[in-house]
Image (cartoon, rainbow, N blue to C red; front, side, top):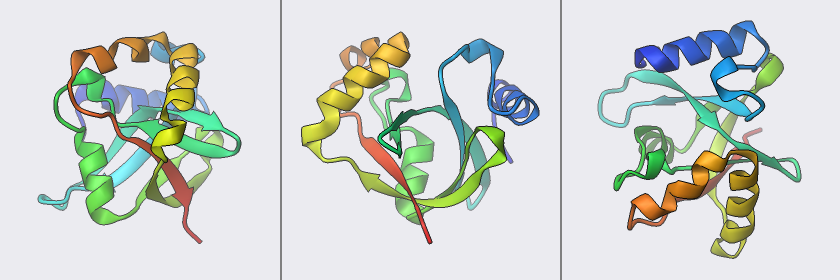
Length: 137
């Protein structure tokens, strides 16, 4: 697992405390493990996510950066990644783009649970991908 120091701390705390991470309060997190599309390096990334109607939705916001996050590019290139949920539940998932017609509803739900997301769209001119992590098998 190659990751930056902040992410390593979050991952360790997530796994130690059943998915709870003090810096994130009640905001739900999951861990997504992907393989680098160029490097082949396996990386685990903590992601804020939305559980909606039994679906696991993630937003490739990258803090409002003008580029898609590496985890998103790697997930799409590989076609799958491993999701770890609170309590140790793990599954292989494929990325499924959420239909554009659902974006506004899901964005509103996400910003309600994590107000930080409200500012991300205003920081970038790119469309922020909204992706469902669909269990495989």
